[in-house]
Amino acid sequence: MTEILTPYEGLVIKRGERILCAEFIRPHTVISTCRVNGGIRQDLRFLTNHQACEPRPHPDCGHGACLAGRDPERYHRLICEYHGLPPERTALLGTAANMYLAGFSRQGFSPPAGGRKTSGELVVFCAATAGVETNAGRAGDPASFYEEEGRFLRLDGEAPTCDRRGTIVLMLFINRALTPGALVRAVKMATEAKVTVLEELHVASRYSCGLATGTGTDQIGVAALEHGGRPLSGAGKHVKLGELIALAVREALFRALALQNKLTPDLVRYAPRLLERYGLGEEDLLVALRDFLPAPVHAWLVHNVRPVMGDLGLVSHLLAYLHLWDQVRYGILPPEIAAEALLDQAALMACALSQRRGDFPSFREKLAAEKDDPRRLLLAALALGFSAKWHHPLGRAVGVIPE
Image 1 (cartoon, rainbow, N blue to C red):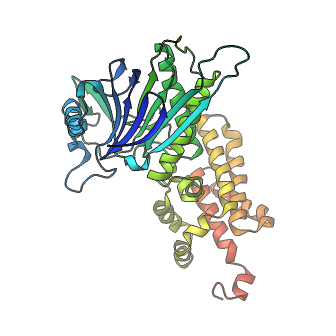
Image 2 (image 1 turned 60 degrees about the vertical axis):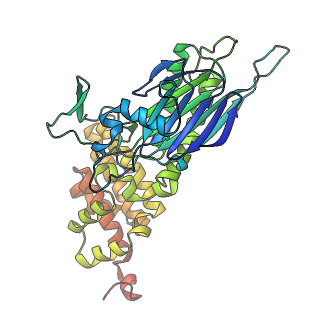
Image 3 (image 1 turned 90 degrees about the horizontal axis):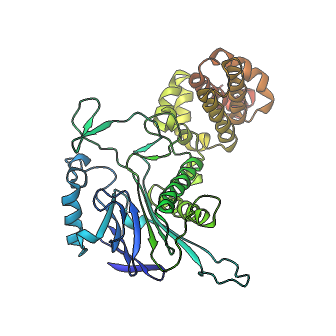
């Protein structure tokens, strides 16, 4: 392994063959979700993140065959031995993400002296790997497995396979001692920060129509440097440590998602991407629009889907439409106003896509027949907007569409 970073004295970050390894030059207390050597430990020398497989399985071997899931203790021992790490002093996190696509962030704070002795700079370092394309989910989505006697069994009675892989792994390092309660609080703060990133990037749950709050296999490890000073007891959002944790997680996770999944605001700014959680990703959206467009017009849209569905005016009103739709599902918008509110926004989508703002009243009237079905209303608005953009006398006169 090659040393790549020294975030603070007592910690070295190394990277090697499918592994990212933190070596504790000075003792740290660690809390982690590791299945081997997890929980709160004070006897660890290494906290590592290892790529166990690729995000999509080998065609002849599903993810269920991966030793990491079948026999975590044996897997732990094999990986440690391969990399020359002592198994009993190593905590091993696992993922399908690439270690060379990890995101890093170092956040620091130097308290004002004010004539008082201080402990120097408070440092929080985060190393994140992330993949959310296939396994993102929302807290409360239906589960697929239950555990009994050490075995994970499918609720539907089928064979225990799991070929949806996507994991967010966070490794946090703090150059101060923390109380046990503060360590737990740090995990909570990091989790809250993770959720804000997924929310801002509109990551869709693959198991419901909600926005994702994580994946089904997220993992975390938090390590706090042991020293002779009084341990920090606060890691919530009102104290500086909590702020640094959140900032470090956010920066590292944004970077990891951009590297692993190419997930950036530019990618999100596209109607089919925003509609994935409603089962209307690009392919499914185009199939659904067949029922709303004549065949030649539909084929025309298919050939131009990227610029049409990336129209910034459309995306703006679509975001508002989806927000309203969410509020209806949450019960915030009562039924007696929901249909009218969604109809207004659908007409605005058609106006934006056609670039004919003055046609709002006629668009609203044409869409009214679909107002009680938010999904059909959305599709009808997209079809109407694209058709109206060109199907008028000027479009025929300039030869854009046939006479």
